Image (cartoon, rainbow, N blue to C red; front, side, top):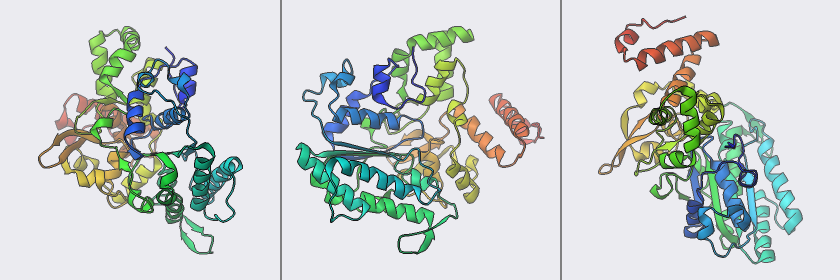
Length: 418
């Protein structure tokens, strides 16, 4: 079985024979039952692949979807003008990058649909392109924006300054936010030229201030109909990856059932709604089967610098945050910032819902699984130990102590310290 490690292009996955967990029934539901969506999911959870899948669907690429669930649902396969923007690769600590990315993208699509000489702002120029595309093709435009929040996450809580077009010095975070706000404001006036809009990101911390220029999108981050839109359910794991589980079990000398349980403890446990559907981390699962190793793949791929800065700034004790019930407004709907880190910690995937009380709309938050729990301990330890060997040794001792339930030894300070 071929595993699409690091491949986020739907066409490449299908054409080159990589394993694909079919989510196209939900893609069809999205495309036919709504218009403007926002989805928040942790990093490396398949957001970019979802955007890519939507792109090819709206381009009418029926050939790519043969044999998938959507093949039996879609009858027309109409082709729409699709505009796909990704902020995933930019380093936005450089004050010039965001404007340059937007300018370059708009200039490129203006070569296809023409430039309106009366449109001077970034948002105005893009709105003119959408109108021209609608007129030229006879179909409304589709806009797909991946990692909408990265230009803000890269610079949050950093004392970086930039000079705007009028010569004023301002915080880079505010500058980037204003640029995005001006860009997204076009959606309100361009409504008649839009067929579908999807924005994805890790957090919602800037949603109110960035999206205030147009009607709020349908936030499906906690919508029970789309809990499994990204990630891998247990049912999908057992059906799509049956042979992979058996190979891993044989390599480790475990039974099939023991292997499934080990995978569940290590990589499962994410919940994105009241249905409490268990979701496995797709990045970790694919890497586990590819390497036949049970390692901390998601955490090893890098702890976001914004989260490390946030924890250091707020001085929050993670032990005081986990294992408690919270009102939904405290971590789902509330705007996260440096003074209120809980929403961002949750939205980044380091905490997840473990139980819910429907009557009072409260949710129990805790670490999703062993991978995240151990990784978070490692991140916290790295703030105190300068030497990576000391850090790793202490984390291993703590993890072993807690795994054995020897809390007395831990509390008495008998865990090895450098």
